[in-house]
Amino acid sequence: MISTPGSHQTQDDAVPTPSTEAGDRVSPAAPEERRAGGGATAADGARAVVRRRISVLLAVALLAYLIDLGSKMLVVANLEGHTAPIQVIGDWMTLQVIRNGGAAFGIGQALTVLFTGIAAGVIVVIWRIARRLYSLPWAIALGLLLGGAFGNLTDRLFRSPSAFRGHVVDFISVQHFAVFNLADSAIVCGGILVVLLSFRGINPDGTVHAPEGKEPAADGEDGQSKA
Image (tube, rainbow, N blue to C red; front, side, top):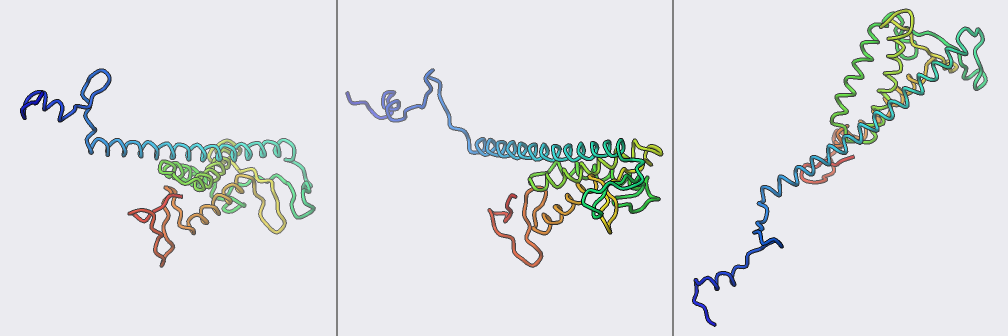
């Protein structure tokens, strides 16, 4: 049977309507909706990465803090009051408990309150950086700094002679060097890692900037890459 143009049958045959099994009309998503959905997915993925990096930071910080706290409790209970140092590696490394009112390695003995405030400020700064943290090496470095800062801050808050003026427990003595503790070691290791990452141009948010005088390697339209 021949149908005339414009008739009901011709229109139905010429323009099939997409439908679901239930017979409902299906309309393709608008380009704006597709773009919005893709952006939301990318943002969710970025937030998930940041949460994982913060988890790494906190795990490293907690491990460093617990090791430092446990070591101080052991040496105070067993070594404080000993007149002769305990040899670990001959005379080169010994254990002897010293109460330190200053900064790391015995610097600034008269500035205990100031160093307490500095330690608290460092913790706040690390937490602010962590909200944009995308780099795994930076998460480890900041975790070491945070754990070490908390370790020594705990001493300053809760040890004698008084709150905010407490003396830090140092017990590792290296020949021709200062007496220090494991919190100091964590801070130094974290600081060295931060310097190395900065020297390589790696930022906490994962972007990489080229050293001065060199052009960054292009990785996309913005010339940035994720570490």
